[in-house]
Amino acid sequence: MIYPVVWNEDRVALIDQNRLPREYTQVEIRRSDDMAVAIKTMIVRGAPAIGVAAAYGMYLGSQEIDTRDRNAFLERLEAIGQMLRETRPTAVNLFWAIDRMLRVASETPGTVEQIRKTLLETAHQINREDLETCQSIGDFGLSSLPKHPEKLRLLTHCNAGALATAGYGTALGVVRSAWQAERLERLYADETRPRLQGAKLTAWECVQDGIPITVIADGMAAHCMQQGMVDAVVVGADRIAANGDTANKIGTYSLALVAKAHNIPFFVAAPRSTVDLSLSEGSQIPIEERDPVEIYQIGNTRLVPAGADFYNPAFDVTPAHLITGIVTEVGTFTPDRLQEAFQDDASIVSSL
Ligand code: MRU
Image (cartoon, rainbow, N blue to C red):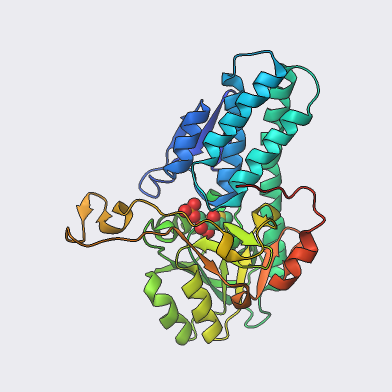
């Protein structure tokens, strides 16, 4: 199993996702500001994984606060939360995890030391819960996939695998469950320009597990669907609004449009912590814009002549009407049923 975020005595070991698949290395994080840098620079990435990483970042931050005064401690913990919030804007799991850590801190009675202890336990719990959640998403996803043909050809975008979660994955969790149930013929993975999470990370995970994978350039997905090579699309999510509109890696929206045009089911797989009921629709989801260097350069080689301008949104929003089903750890819902399913869930907290 691949675990991207592992607690190790007094520090966090993160798989350095910027070095895969060339090199498997772990980066040790001992301070909250280093965790913020790791999230921002995508050493750790993927919505649930950055939530888990931020939770440990909050605990590391709690160790840096040098006071026994409870109120002063909570105030400084809030500031550490703010620093971590400012790393990436789109995936709501980041805010969800920070809010949960802050809530636990303020609700824990007793000394600062007792609060620190509870914070570490909560970070472990967020990590464990996400792993269990992904396994349930895999099961529900498998039962929601088309019944025919027996062996499915699935297509995914970006990396929503073990690396993007506590382990197992959301969209790739569904793929893993289909593979284990002998219902998968092949996974097609968009390479996912500009950061190439599909080509580098999804392909790496599948090769590790022996899952047959074909990597295609993003612009080839429509052709593959037209040629009858794809039975269903499964992607992850960074934030899902109350009406089911879904933000995910840039390129997801065009995939959904093409799937609709070819009558191919389009599934979003995500935990409840990705659902943001405070936003009524997808247009309210903040979309991260990243450094244009990701577009004009590959490695150290500049591809585009100086003088051109660039636009580099990291995510797009797929409208709910293009989504066949949203697979969560408690079942698969059509987008219009999402709000009703989750509105009474007190564990769902989000803020910007
Ligand atoms: O920019 P990234 O690599 O963090 O984007 C990741 C994605 O868009 C994933 O598809 C999403 O977070 C779901 S991960 C289970």
